[in-house]
Length: 317
Image (cartoon, rainbow, N blue to C red; front, side, top):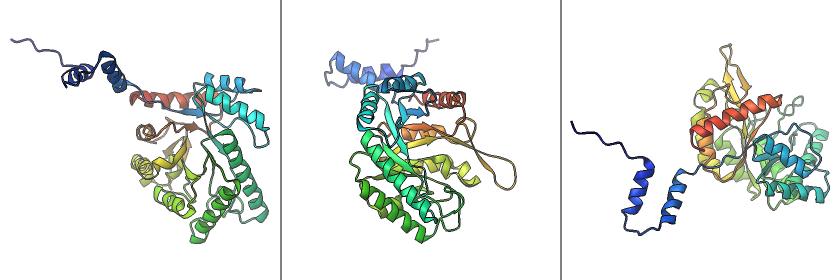
């Protein structure tokens, strides 16, 4: 019986095809093409730093010890310019992307005093993001709930609230006038933006160059139907919003068997979020960070990062 030959590897097939094209590629050119074929795409992963730091060098060391190449903003809004510049330079030298400055507050609050306080926080946070060169400043759009700044309320989805979000966001951007960062609104389950389409509608209505997208897929999962189709929802978000995404949050979610519907946020790897789709879509963008959040201990963050890296490795990212 004739001995069966071994199947050719992808690398061998690529090499033979390059040699047989008549393109007269040099050996270095062939080597470069092979490297491009097998090179892994970078994944920007970050999270909170629990270790205390008192200098840019110590901050970089703490970030790197966690295996991160992205980070939350390491300084506050009242920090001096020279300190901010030092942290910005340290991040660039260490190849760390400063992903976002949080402006967590309720700029559409029904309480005038709370609203004014929130607007100031948004302006100060956006200014800090611009000063340090962060990818974005992120907040939620806000809520009409007088008791919970991020809670659900029947007025959250009215046309009047949509218009208020538009005017509020415009005013924040127009006053700060950022030149190298973006103001973004985190996706939410019970407030705008609550879908790719509602985010697109906001982008068009706000109509500001320095307004962009912050994507948290878990916050969009608010029903069993969305839970079981979350991969399609993630793909739709990247299809419609991908070029505008500046930062993403990494969480997970589980649907319990308890009636009525109960959805609980959990550590990445403990729920049903389609991380293969999430990471595959994210890898198509240029250096957009994925930031871990809402965990209680360094050990939990380590386990979350381990899960995300294992999914990334399975996708050759």
